[in-house]
Length: 455
Image (cartoon, rainbow, N blue to C red; front, top):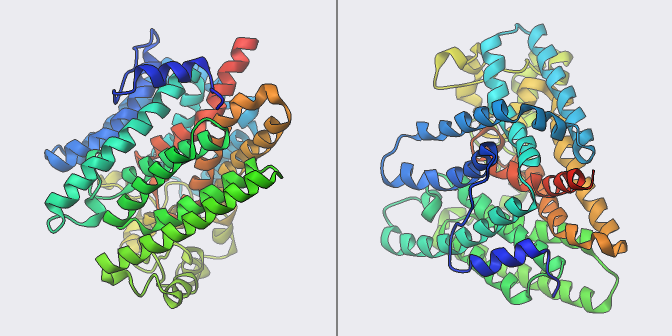
């Protein structure tokens, strides 16, 4: 079994029985960058269990603004780092399209700023992680993720036993809390991706993989996280494709794992239906077909559905607004909502309550920046995914670069997830997006700091 680096080996030895062990860095911006991940993971426990107001989630905005002020030059350098340059250019074009559309449709600086905050923090924190976190810090947070995953598994078991009839499955999130499963899903999936990455780079045994998958399957049943089952299978296939070698032994091993994953998926879905009978129709063949083809399919909220959002928006809203609106939307900020009226648009007041388009990234992005903006938004993680995929393939040829494959695999898995999440939910415009940003940044952060060291 290969060892990724001396840093990883040290972390595993010294933190075997510790949830967290981070040494404070001399650079306060680095400490804040790490604090954001820990804070987002744990603050929900206090809001859910101790009545702390959910306005506590806004504290991450304060941390990010502080980091920007303290590391603006470093962040700009990371923005133009060669590994993410294409994605950065796409992001600038997207910003230009959204602003141009806003000007055409009535520019409101307050709404534009609010939209920048809601969508921009996801991207800003990505570049902050690249600029501030070196390999040792990255490894520390990845190790923290694994420890938190295992502890949270046992907390969820206790929570289920004690409160099965008293709280909804969506709130069955253990140590990470909250009334919805967003943070819990990220913790589960990121840990699966980390362990898959270790496995594909020969840095953990199949026993560890099966242990993590077993815990994930149990939590998916207890908290009725049916989509998680499909995500895990898709992520394994994507990562397997990137790491594939034409060796009989490996082909047989991967085939067995796929079969086991499929069997576990089917069993888990059947148990979910048995525990929560209202999913029986949805998880049938007819139900799945209906979810893909009808306006009121899976995830339906108001008129908007995950898989038919663009069609519904065109049918009920954009058909009366012309082809230009379909191309570039109503403008950045012009479809925004906030609990503060000054950040709520007239457009949202007219359509938001009925269509609930802010529930999914695909619908809210399409509403504000149209098809051009939506394509650009999708291309950003796609470009990063392709970059990771290509590098993993190259690393198999160049043995001296094999160590970086672990980090590339983490980035590959999480960019694949973010692509699916564009349709699945709206986490990219919430504070939970900071977690997504960190895991996506992993390979680019490590390579950025390596490039600085060799410069």
